[in-house]
Amino acid sequence: MKFDTEYLWYETKARRELVRITDEVSRVVERSGVREGMVLVSAMHITAGVWVNDDEPGLHEDIWEWLQKLAPQGPDYLHHRTGEDNGDAHLKSLLVHHQVMVPITKGKLDLGPWQQIFYAEFDGQRRKRVIIKVMGE
Amino acid sequence: MKFDTEYLWYETKARRELVRITDEVSRVVERSGVREGMVLVSAMHITAGVWVNDDEPGLHEDIWEWLQKLAPQGPDYLHHRTGEDNGDAHLKSLLVHHQVMVPITKGKLDLGPWQQIFYAEFDGQRRKRVIIKVMGE
Amino acid sequence: MKFDTEYLWYETKARRELVRITDEVSRVVERSGVREGMVLVSAMHITAGVWVNDDEPGLHEDIWEWLQKLAPQGPDYLHHRTGEDNGDAHLKSLLVHHQVMVPITKGKLDLGPWQQIFYAEFDGQRRKRVIIKVMGE
Image (cartoon, rainbow over all chains, first blue to last red; front, side, top):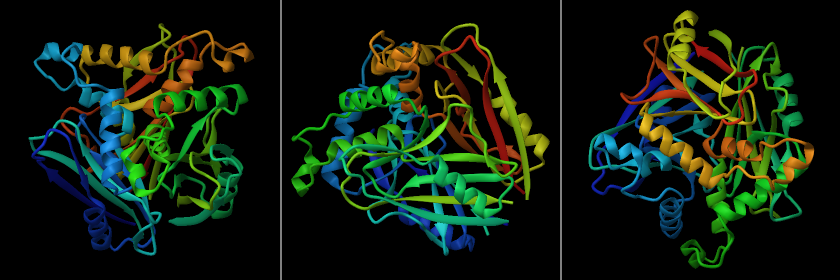
């Protein structure tokens, strides 16, 4: 049984940013030598998400607008009494989930034709981590 | 360590359709011979979801109505400048998540009494895939 | 390859309650002897959620208010024709997801500094289960 773990660090320039990370995940899977298994891709922060969806810029704008509507940025979260101002980022993280499992078949990420893995930063401009853990044979 | 992978194909008659797939997942788990482990059930498309919930027709209608409210079908998504008309289906997929991990104990899906696995099609009427990957011993 | 499975039972006093379960999950991981692997933490009921986020009381109130807004309690769900009154709890479960996978590295839960695991009860006051399944080496 083989394992491989890597931590990707991101410090986005904008507060909200979407980073396509399929190639980084793919590289870790290749390095691991795992032919059959799964890879967990999981944000290690509570104000970020990880999802699998389409790499289409118009859709990305739609997603941001939608997330702002369902989990709006605002001054009136109780969480802000702690001095933070990122209440919306926590809700966005809960909404889209902070992790995915990607199947590995014949040594490759077994994704559908349009599936790409994204790291979604909801409260950036500081160093944050994503863990990639491969498990298989 | 044992693995077993199967791709289920679906071509739903309606644009939106809910398909109970517990039996198919269960069959793959039995075939695999895995007694202890996990099975990943994951849509390979970006306009579909996979969830575990109740098999109750009234609830299913409630879920559709709720999804239409939170991620409405509409003509004004930027994604539609590509010629697509399924912006809402991408958002619905993000909302409910596109995958689940089901534990396997003593050779069976270790689900609670009311838990059933569903494939949720948000943009059907074409052939789409779900991957089932069993991993364990 | 090692496995360890435990079922945690909860009977919350309130209908909605948030229970931090990081220590329970951690205990099962230690008992398992797994140094590298993953642990699945998954509600076995369809009216509960499991998530990883911040342990901050103000934020917890924000989350409850937000969930009530997006998946409101109400008398008019079709699901209630069955005699149930928990339609909102099913929707809340779909919204936040009912499970997480936590990576295990060097024998410990590999969580970020603010990540805590929570069981979110949306329809309590009865005995309900969460499965914890460790898999690794």
